[in-house]
Image 1 (cartoon, one colour):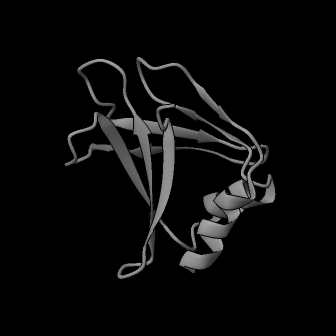
Image 2 (cartoon, one colour):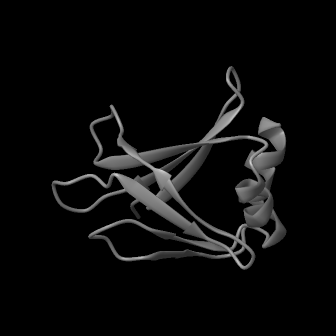
Length: 101
């Protein structure tokens, strides 16, 4: 099974990278995250890896991450030209956020 989305902590600068796998040749320049209480469009950039990824970076203390954690990790990710990802409630998402702070 292919990974569709990943969150990772960058401890040196206290940020969280949100990486989305992109199908096709174009990477997305924006990524919209939707939670029950907050929506935000983030700038995204192509990843330097071999996989076709778009990556958005958020400060670990950003209120958007609080909104994601409040929903126990249940949120949606929209990128232009790609199907919307609806993420189920996973405790691991909140764990990444908390551990990065």
